[in-house]
Amino acid sequence: MKMLKKAPLAIVAGATLLPAMAMANMHGQHSIGPNEGDREFSLSGTGKSSKDFDNGSAGVIGDYGWYLTDKTLVGVRQSVNYASVENGDDVWNGSTSVFADYHFGQGAARPFVGASLGGIYGDGVEDTGIAGLEAGVKYYVLPTTFVQARAEYQFLFDDGDSAENNFDDGAWAYTIGMGLNF
Image (cartoon, rainbow, N blue to C red; front, side, top):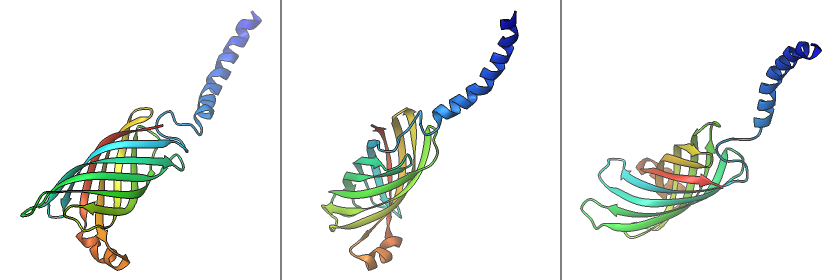
């Protein structure tokens, strides 16, 4: 009989402590997405256009990065592109850059903003510097696997003065792909 009197007290105590224990267990851990120290690899398709949409290209981009924190990713990006130029020869080119992205949120959808800096080279382009500001979203379909979409405003430069002058003559680059954290 004494046991039956203690049962409601145990149920109330357990019901009160269960959410607190669950919150303590989740603190500092993500059930989905990266953790500090994780690596990331993504493979994407890309398209670019001039700001007037009269020239365009398509290509493949590979990103490899490291999470400095749960939200800050730094890495290296390599692209290979085929370009169709109005009134000109079709060309192949590539770019190599470093990037840094900051991610928001902890759910399946992770918006991010960032910047990149590197070089562009190949047919039909003058080997030169390239910089960009980017924004996008990753959506985790599995705990470590995501699909992503990114838009980047890129501009070319030879030195600091030309970077400032060329910002207004940049182009948009669009990327859709998938990746994983490990």
